[in-house]
Length: 464
Ligand SMILES: [Ca+2]
Image 1 (cartoon, rainbow, N blue to C red):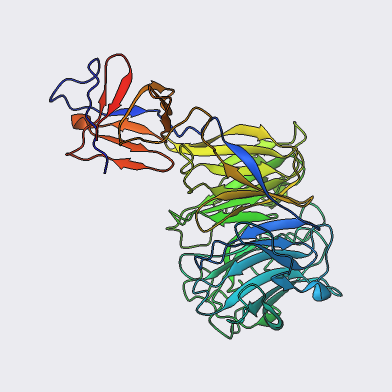
Image 2 (image 1 turned 135 degrees about the horizontal axis):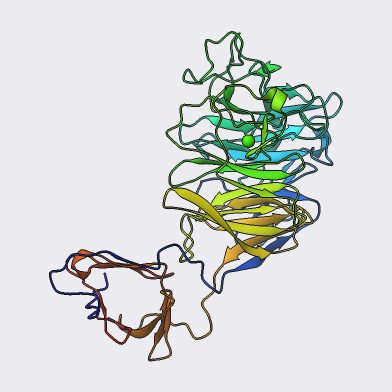
């Protein structure tokens, strides 16, 4: 614990209760950049971690392989190679990966891929032998679910386990354009939906619609008992939820739903949801009527964010709410566009979401990813994986003898008199002059015993 001694004479009067927030919203550091982590053959389209403390990330390649980056290098031997049973190309291929919430105790992970022949989405389980933690057993496939795909596009692809332990599966509307068979609104069809299944169960029962039913149906799924609806459905009215995620802190769901020809959108589902949400497609595209003849009185959930195609954007790639250690980034939802490579940061403040463009990367952003430590990655379909990093600027410093004297600049950086500085995520002075500061390597949390002082000239003094 570092103790602060402080007061801000122009703002603070002893005994005067106040709240001062500085800055008002999260502020990404100026040094924020993308670090190339891995270049690889093929078309990477997802990054995952196993939740096993290994520090590994798993990079999914469209044609049917999963590669491991162990923190220092990309391993040459694939973790998984099932390219012999996959139809790849366009929006088809090995599209999703999720490790069992109890991995490595169960040694199971799950994939979502497109089958050759009569096109289907297949959800399968594989096993990692304890003796070869970096190489899964490609012969261990156990098929849980299959869904027929009437067209080659809009196969969704992302799968994630929720905090409830169930597997969520994002399904596109079947493809072509404009949802020709009106499937996304049809509760008797698994396309255009968010599904929720219990991978620990073995039989989906008579109310389920999957072509294979080697999974359980959570009793709390919203349409269980409705004979006109598939038991697997958690939410509906989605067009192509190519990439979506759970906020690891709040467990809220954020869905990047690809638009038809005009509007890309982000949908939000709070962790308190009991399912059944209708996200509007194909009545609505974003906040705009797409087909009035498909609009009825069904309550719908509007997107929290949308953008149009006027700047050559064409297809949203949903991302992650940042929960890593970069100062100023906590809670920022990072997402991008596949066609332009533009990346936006969105924040929730004062009751609403707002987005700002961070950078036009020109990458073909197929996905974002998150590692166990909370680092966020950007995946370029062209074969590269990048990580958001914020290296200290050259004149930054670490604490020496736990004493720093510096000048507040934009609420982020303290320029130390000894040519040293620390980057601070946020700086709050609350009633009584107590403060909260967070730095990349040193976490300061003050309490009643550790007041902070910002002096009249803007100099901040930290006393051990
Ligand atoms: Ca929608």
